Image 1 (cartoon, rainbow, N blue to C red):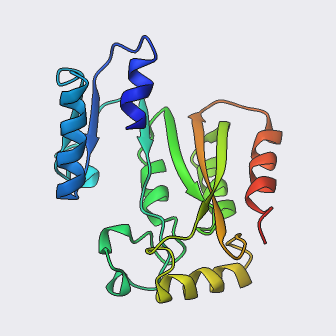
Image 2 (image 1 turned 45 degrees about the vertical axis):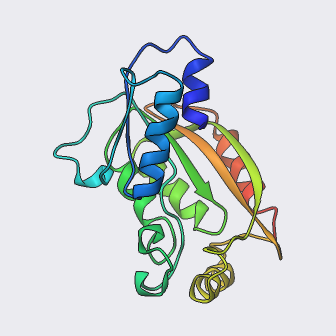
Length: 194
């Protein structure tokens, strides 16, 4: 679990609260937390982040939100993976919560330029990122999802090759007037797959 490894390899002494709606993933996360003896520092709640009683108080939000684009969630194998019609709906909702720092996973086939513009409108700047290629899997290859991704490509809102798309971990900070070149570099990398 990347979060556990990150905490173990740093001097971070805070408490982490995670949210997982999938029962198997929730049990697996808690098992790993117990195996690393982190039960007093890392809590994974079996609930939706958005269904929490109130917005969790934190300085940083780390998230890999659903980003599958489709016209409706009815066609998805797992409805919880629905990211809206362009794949960025949940990401936009998360950026609207006003956390000072957000680490957000962004897909190259889910309107990355529109999402980055939205982040800028919310007062965020890109301060760091790491991108890597991923193969299309069973969920991103579902017929209705693939059809919608192709439509987004024609609208210049999705970038991918025959077998790969890019997934970028992007760190945003509020009121940080970071170098605008970083935003441009991220977009150049996202657009590199055609």
